Amino acid sequence: MPRRLFACTPSRLAAFEDCPRRYRMIYLDRPRPPKGPPWAHTSFGVSVHNALRRWWEEPHQRRTPLRAAELLRLGWIDEGFRDPEQSQHWRERAVGMVRGYVEGLDPAAEPRGVERSVAARTEALAFSGRIDRLDDRDGELVVVDYKTGRRPVTDDDARTSRALALYALAAGRMLRQPCRRVELHHVPSGRVAVAEHTEDSIARHVRRAESVAADAVEATEALRGGGEPDRAFPPRPGSLCSWCDFRRLCAEGQAAGPERQPWAALGED
Ligand code: SF4
Image (cartoon, rainbow, N blue to C red; front, side, top):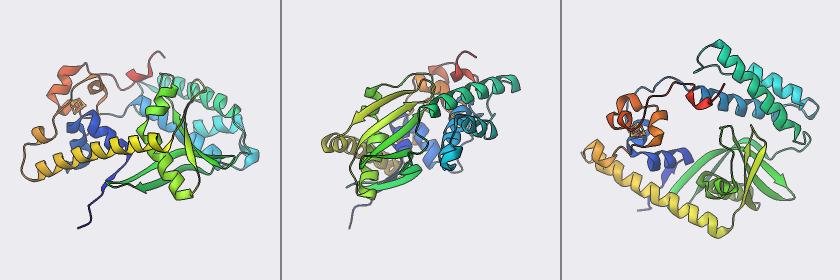
C-alpha cells in the first residue's frame, strides 16, 4: 500500500507544534468550537496584505503610493477595534505604512506571482500554501512574505521559517527554476530580512515538518481509536494563550495568562 501523505499547510503544522489542543479544535472537532471575537491586529494585517495584492494587480501606470493609500482605505477591515476612532487611527497608520513600502518598489517589476498558490509532495507530506509575492530576479525565484507585526524581523527569522523554506521548495519545483532566497518584508519599518537556502537547509526543514506531521497523525489515530481527547491532544499553555481564539473554552489557557482586549496587540495608539 502506498503511504498516505499528510495534507497540510504551514499554519496547520505550526498549530500542532504550538498547542495540540488548539490544533484539535481548529482541524478536527466538528462542529468547530466557536472562536472568540475578531482581533484588531488581524484586521490590520489582512487589510495591508490585501492592499498590496491589489496594488500589484493594477496596471503599471497606476502602481503609485497614492493608489496604495486608496486601496488600503477601500479595503479596510474595521473588526476588533475598540471604537470607530481607534479603527480610523490605525487605518491611517496603515496608509502611511503601505505608502512608504511601495515607494521603495519598482512598479514596473512584474512579480512571478502575487498570493501565488504552491504545492509540493515529500515522502510524507502533501504540502500546500500561498506565497505573498514571488519575484523573479535574474532567473532565480525569491519568496517574499509580508509581516505587519510590531516586532521587526531578523535574518534569523527568515532562516528558521519553515513556511518560507517549504514555499521555496514548492515554487522551485513547480516553476522549474532555482528558488533559494527567502525574504521577510516588515511593512511598518521597511526592513527586509533575508535567508539563502541550500538543498541541505531545505531538507532539514522538510524533515522537521515530517516529524511534526507524524506526531499529528499518531495523535489523530489515537483519538479516532477512542482515546481521550486531552491525552491525544494535550493543552500546551503558555504566552500564546492570551491570544488564542479558544481561550474561553480552555481552563489551562485561562490560568496561563490574562484575557486580552481584541485590540491589545496593536500596542500604543
Ligand atoms: S488557550 Fe492555550 S492551552 Fe488552551 S487551546 Fe489555546 S493555546 Fe492551547
